Amino acid sequence: MFAHVGGVLATDLQDVTTDLAALDSAGFWAVVVTYEGEVTCARFGTVREAPLPYAPWKGPPRDAWSTSLDEAAYVAGVERVRAAIAEGTVYQANLCRVLSAPLPDADLLGLANVLAAGNPAPYACVMHLPGLRIASASPELYLSRKGDIVVSRPIKGTGRTPADLLPKDRAENVMIVDLVRNDLGRIAEPGSVSVPALCNLEEHPGLVHLVSTVRARLPHGAGWPELIAATFPPGSVTGAPKSSALTLLDELETAPRGPYCGAIGWVDADSRRGSLAVGIRTFWATGDLIRFGTGAGITWHSEPCREWRETELKAARLLEVASR
Image 1: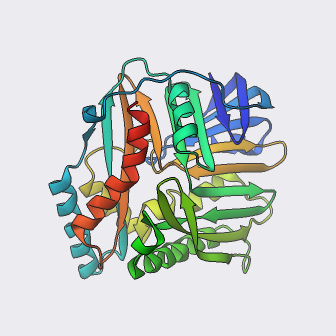
Image 2: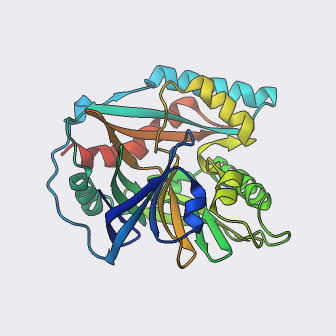
């Protein structure tokens, strides 16, 4: 068992728990919270700065991948979200699908190597934990913490080039920033929530994103359990209002998201620091299958076929890398 996350290699597994309160105790923890809320916190005894260890990789053929929602089903789902918006049930919802392919006995360290070469990402990691094998190339920060200061950097708005971004993308980003502000406001010190950056353009391999920054200060006595309870699942992968969007998405999506759209990262309880990414651009292996999720944020102005193409765009580079 090991984790390579945040630029360090963690080995010598000491403890595994589902209790988020452990993250405020002691030691270095690798953390996974699935979209459905299943928690894995793994404490390691040996942690050192180290490059990603090498392992070879041979992925499934590109044509071996199947999807939980085909184009017709996804387009119908977009229309259902738009109908819910017209009814006033939601303002936005992030509709996702899960791709899967056969891959017996997958060692995802090799996949992490090819992702690092072909799709580098600021929150990349690979973890082999009890019952969990994950390789992520996430570009999105869910929560970082340094002492009492918390930062979230939601992504909304994706294109191949800046020219692909529409007014709808900026409006969607602002909507999700409001949601994240409200989530953090449930736990933060009154008056401490701010937005230092709104709709900044970021370039990633093959894509551009609009990214905003939301900052807050935790009150005395608040820790990781309270912080995650107030903000999870991340606003950028659910919708607004969050509770209504979650209910709608549960009706429309036909496969569990698992680590995809959850939280993946590390916590150093001794220094009261940590960084959890949103589990997008993330592969995970269970049994003899490897899985990968992709999705798009749907608003009233969404064009159903364009939203399908956005999910294809987000998946294309990652699947090309993983299918070698």
